[in-house]
Length: 398
Image 1 (cartoon, rainbow, N blue to C red):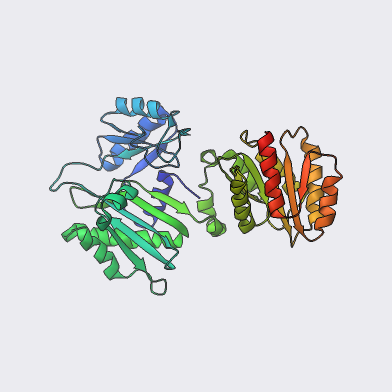
Image 2 (image 1 turned 90 degrees about the vertical axis):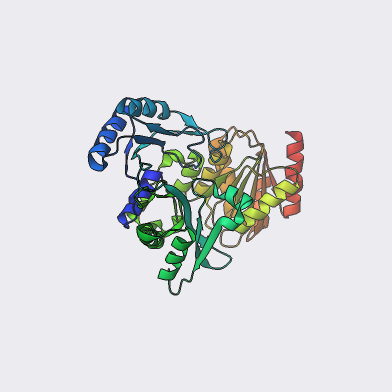
């Protein structure tokens, strides 16, 4: 589950990680009030207005602006709120900005120049260990650094049996070329960051940039946190941070029916029971000349209600020209699924795309008979190759 920058910073601060302080606002008036409060609490004279969406590259897209007085705070907040922000991560459709973070200016003059670094923590599945990735090239896209200057990326793997060791945090601080107070601050920053990552059951922390201020403080200027959905039952407070307005509405609806759904850009809708079979079905669709419009796993306990919900979600995608239902009846009986398909078809009505149903397993023949005798615009198949051929045929006629 993705969360906003201001929420990620709340988590970090609760674990002793120093952050760029800020207050979230939903109107220009709230932004001005937030700026005044920040000035009182931190002494900052300038403020950074940052769009809050679930995507990176906000600065390049015009979603991060510097305000040098309260009039500019109101003006910039008014500009950013309500805009459709397009970045390299949002796609051309962009995302609507409904909140801004009014943050303190941390690039103030002092005894030394501010310096930006990159830090992230994620799971290296190949090694079965968490890895801390660090770079002196903070503020840049890590993909660009990896492509142009891979030698500037430092990786430190953490043995799960012993956890993060002190020498590893110091190794990162040394690699950044820090010394004195800044060195101590970075060691503390890395240690607290890793503790926050572990205890929140996160799948990724990315701090870009980590800033060494002109007076040698180390703090998170930005924060991107991805929480493991499978562990949210242990963190009710974190689950409450979910912002449904930032998610695809079809994926949200699918979640209400406990369906695993991911929208794609193709023309053939898929409904399958089992993630592995769903992946194979998507391959078959591509081999038949189509493109999958979605990933949809109805699970092992598919029934008429879940099948109907799946139909409704798939049909809301205007790009869908055909639907392929591929069910292996191990836990669930094929005749039960077939009845669910027929019932759903009748309940929805006016389905103007062909449906191919491939049933295999328990009561497969009975399921195929129900489909064939339904009198509906539904085609049955027994083997996957046959289903693929029918997909090819209906696409040619579309």
